[in-house]
Amino acid sequence: MPDTTPILALPVLVPNQAQPYVTHNAALRRLDILVQLSVMGFDAETPPALPEEGDLYALGPVPLAEWAGQPNQLAAWIDGSWLFLAPQPGWRAWDQNAGLLRVWDGVGWVRPAAELDNVAGLGIGTASGPVNRLAVKSEAVLFSHDGADQQVKINKASDADTASLLFQSGWTGHAEMGLAGGRDFSIKLSADGSSWTEALSFDAGSGDLGLGGAPGGGRAEIHQPADAPALQANCTHAGFAATLQLLRADRAASPDFNFLRCLSDAAGTGDLEFRLSGDGNGSCDGAWSGGGADYAEWFEWADGNPKGEDRTGLSVVLDGPRIRPAQPGEVPIGVISGAPAVIGDGDMDRWRGKYLRDDFGRLLWEGDTEAGDQRQRRLNPAFDPTQGYTPRATRPEWAMVGLIGKLRLRKGQPVDPRWIPMRDVSSEVEEWLLR
Image 1 (cartoon, rainbow, N blue to C red):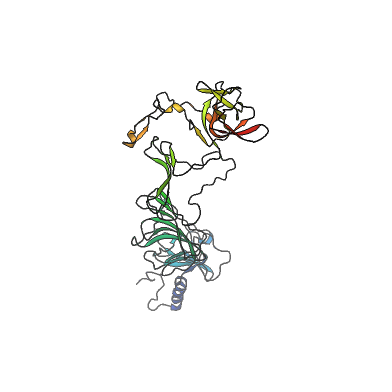
Image 2: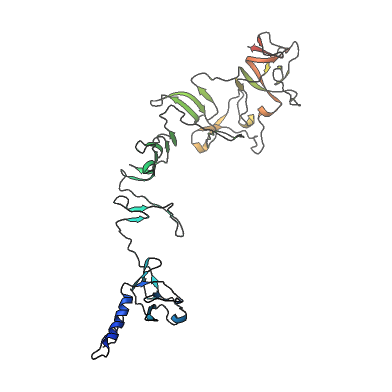
């Protein structure tokens, strides 16, 4: 018969044993240590200077002093000396300092593996509930990668259900984003938590965007039910010198498409009120109003205006295809305009000869191979895209000649007998009606 029990190594009484109380008391001491095992420290290396009766430590792999030679043992201070006990796999000990439970796995004291699958709820810093089965109360929540990508997935049962993120303030929802009752992604806003406005909506099939409502008919569609602009662009840069709004078609110019179409009665078939065609032509179903009061065309100075003089208000005559200041007795064709309402023969920031024209000035067109049966302007072989171009409006050799309408002349300039004087603008300038 063994002298000790197989698990806790408790001493056992033998027949006719002398002083059996000694064996019995030794067994009780071991039980007192091992039952409800509670340890003052783990991986301990040095014994305390003044241990107290019942102090218990889990030693590390290389203990020192009185613990030397007792790696990974349990050391208990009993009756003025250290009692060493060998832990067995599966023994559990409470860490008094950390407030944690540990288990001896045969090598070291480890945290017991928690059963986290199919738990009814989990609350971190707060309590979970039947709806919020996972509840976290903290300043932040971090999801980090495990060496590659990272995803957060929200799955709903059917298309008619909702899978979303709800943003609240004081437990009142004010913003929600996700899949609400369908497959389209949307962002909704609310000021009071009960009345909601769909701010953005993306069509799941096409990717089209709707602002203030669902998309329908365009890559981006704006719904504005209020009496306010549907689209407003503001540039707050004090030195702004760029383009506030840019419309670009990734193809050659052609009358087969439009940059802009403006319709009234949009709920029905719509009446076309304004159109800017892809070939640069514009049309409107009303009057075009400008701040100027004359029609002008670009002409080139015969002398090239070498000093870059301001010749506004001078009467001019033709000198071949060019112009020069009118001399007394000559009948001028027009006046250098300061603020025309309409300007003809413009260059639109590119060389006028870039595209070929017929003898009447009409553009020549050809098929666009990239756009199927659509047309594009025929490029002039002489055009060199590497050469820069300076627009006529910034070149001193070109001037806007007002040919008809109200124009302002410098006093004393030659005039056409058909012109009608209207008023003196100043001591040096008069206003005339050219016709």
